[in-house]
Length: 51
Image 1 (spheres, rainbow, N blue to C red):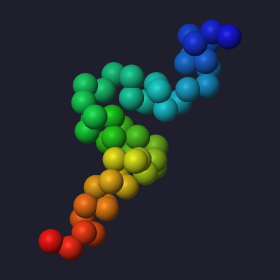
Image 2: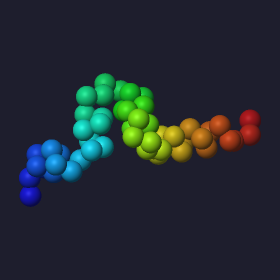
Image 3: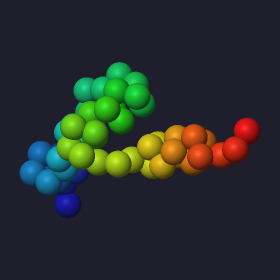
């Protein structure tokens, strides 16, 4: 069981965010793969709350 092999062969998501410098950049990188993230869910919840 080698983490390096798993990363190199199977981890498309990890590769997509590995060079990101911030959470926002990582979230945007995942959007390029059409991934709706937990951060997106939390932001949507905040938008839908009445003030």
